Image (cartoon, rainbow, N blue to C red; front, top):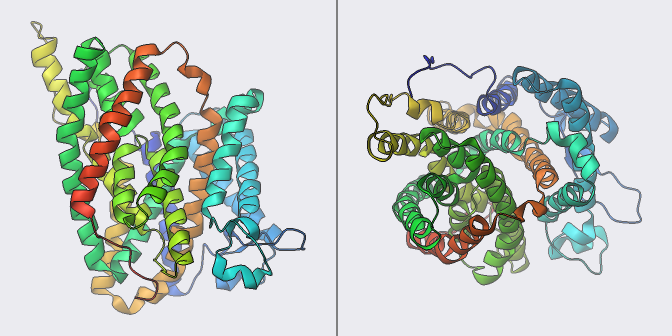
Length: 488
């Protein structure tokens, strides 16, 4: 395992995780310029609510300094800047630049059109805003309907318009996009920490405890089930267990590499994970919202432990947040948005942070116990670093940076918030929306055919073990926690 001499900085220029950090920090730094009175990100096009049948504006620039900018100009600048950034990342990741550029352009257009439709007032406007838009009826789904539309459009392309899905595939990198969005979420958590430090700390501590408990329960139970009930070989059982019980594709790949499993094992498990993640993404937000409308933080944390990919978890958390905040508003309770999403993401972040350590532990077990052969190489402690999800570094850095501003330079909080507001809200949500479309485009439900025992084990483990235990653990550590009220 230590046959290749790697430096600690290897991969910084070409790995997807690192490019999530770089894209995150580029906009983080641009947002910080507002401290000196320069709004370098306010041109970003954010969606606005509009009414069907009326001439309206679908998008507008995010920053007050760009108030007079037309929506066409704002969208154009957004496209040019983001195309330049992602193409730069694609170049260093050695992707096919022509295919990536064309695929990204399609992805951008589809996302912006889908989001605009989702912000139509009859779909998204809360009941207390019907008068503002002259409505007599509406679904009051909040902006969460835009997320759902992006996913539906992506799934239609991925399963029914496969030539278009193939054309866009080079640019459909949902894990990259969502990891970038999670770095931006670090800014959001930092801003929330400035406003509600106690709540943020309590959420982080409870999330860490819940994650630790879940680790001790999920993996051994599912491994025993895979070996005893489904008669899977050790390698298949280990890779599938990590994928199901830890964090999806990343854990499956890390485990496969750690135990030197055949590459096909991680590939097949990854396909299963993506397909099931889509099912969870569609089902769980509405289910949790209907079953436990009075436990928002519990629902968010349970989502973080149940949905097994970063993209699907963040996406499901975003939908859940939108649905629960809108439903609470209809009851006259105005929760601050994004706290439910933060509970989901923060729990998932803790899980992701242990990928490297868990892969290292499994590598040791496989080298010294399972495969135990004369002359087997040792396992270097550096494996923890190489398997550590690097985008977490960007998330934590952004979070702590804004906490430091609150602690050591409180007089610039308002100025810093101008740029942070654009990056942590419309820009972050844009990356979520792009992720939704991309995830849908690469999800082919027909791939479940012929995967028999694996698919059945995944389904049984999810319904019988993961979801119930995750919710129980989330309830134990988060019961009664509520998002702050608007203006509190």
